[in-house]
Image 1 (cartoon, rainbow, N blue to C red):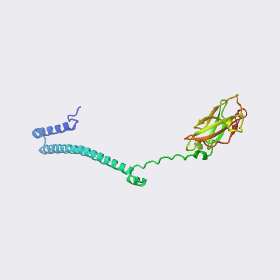
Image 2: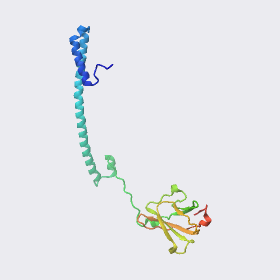
Image 3: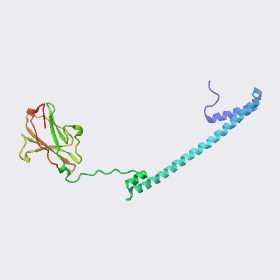
Image 4: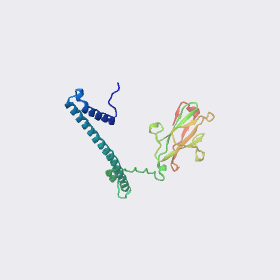
Length: 230
């Protein structure tokens, strides 16, 4: 059965007031004691006063909330402007920034000095026959361990060179294959070229400055299938 008392608060209060008025006028004829009539009317008056006070406080709270948001926005705007002035001041140190609670700029990474690549130890080379169709050339500071073989800072990659027929006596016989940025280098097998061939490598800097070559390594496909040469 549907409740006779409304569900929304304003209608509830209106019902209470209407019912209290009816009881005040008709309660005695329906065996309602006078003290009950008085108590009911007082309770409705208190409820009405509480609703009125709540409405006033709620409106005040909304106004206070809007005022708070506006005040906070103005304070933060001024604080940010002031913090920016502190940030760019020549006298401001990172200790000042930390104490003030503002951003400490990240230190820019410095580029390696000119000629750095020439003093860098050359990459080591490890050649592995990987199957019938390819072999792999691992290069880097630690080619036998991929987890500890990161390319040195300041390098753009590794230039691989090959000399067919063995280690030559002159640099003119070496041919550059390509610049590689990752190890290993996968080379397709050429059954018509069993070797031995010589390989060497060197680092190139990000400005394409050339480092020293590694010691040459011989790899003969015809004799090394399934074997490792380094």
